[in-house]
Length: 213
Image (tube, rainbow, N blue to C red; front, top):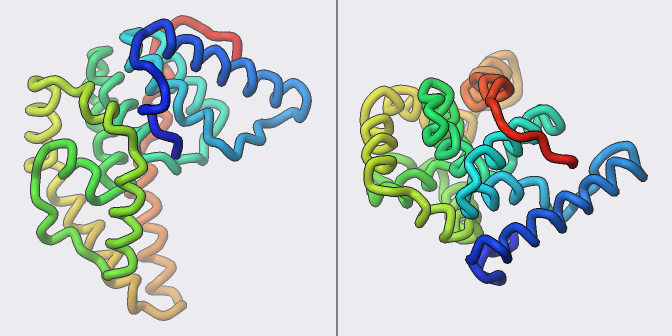
């Protein structure tokens, strides 16, 4: 993932970057009938609006992403910002759902955000190393934008109602490391997928200002 540190953090620069990404995606849609964006610009637009302080633009961008990429949950940094946008928009139940999805996308992301240890989150050396490498590619700005009140909210959920689902997720992942193909493995994979995808459509009704993607 491209780092945010390659641009100035002022709103004017961020808006220019957003418009550039929007125009490119719109061009791809017009010319190809779909999006073919190997650089992952679609993952940056919502977070960039949030970093710029445009909450309406952010929630509308996440709504657009949900509609255009309904099966895409590949960017945990984007989901971290998506959670925050929902919280700031006072869509609290949806924010809880998105925080849960964010946690299950990347085991070490919320501990880094919240300053918590990662004891008990290990699955296998290879898996753990890969997750740590992915974590290093998430822009630091996505963490820095959270204020104390928002961190306390996320921390309470992480230590509270999300702890049970997190424990079950880790348990399944560890079992899958050694479970051979068969009916039992299929059931575990289905359960894991269902946990990750819990309710993405919850964000589809968010109000916002339409943009010309």
